[in-house]
Image 1 (tube, rainbow, N blue to C red):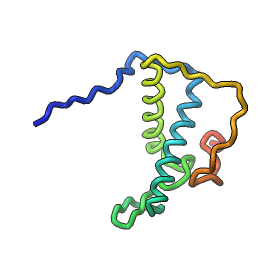
Image 2: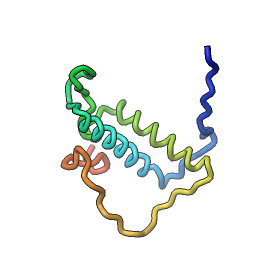
Image 3: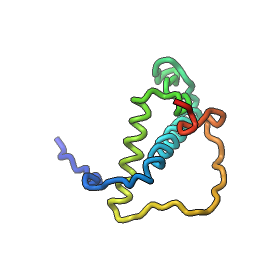
Image 4: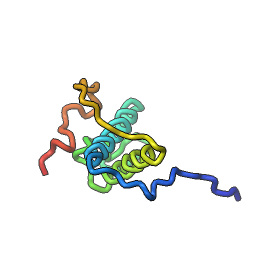
Length: 118
């Protein structure tokens, strides 16, 4: 049996500044969009249950429509990435430059999570 040699970046002492909370949600949404876009390119489509043989997946829906458990998966990954960036000594800041819209993702017509009324 091989020894486990994984050594993830220690983020245990990193506290995310409050101004990055919205960024965490946006990155989680983006991670879902990137994943969904790749799946769709590979011929996958929405289905009520995951079926690798027929390439069906229940999460091929807009991020805003995902169950909270699926959103939490993406949020944890985004949060871990942001904390790792900070743990490595980088700073994250938003520049006051007007940003251009990114190319539309696979669910471009769907409202973003931050825009969806609760």
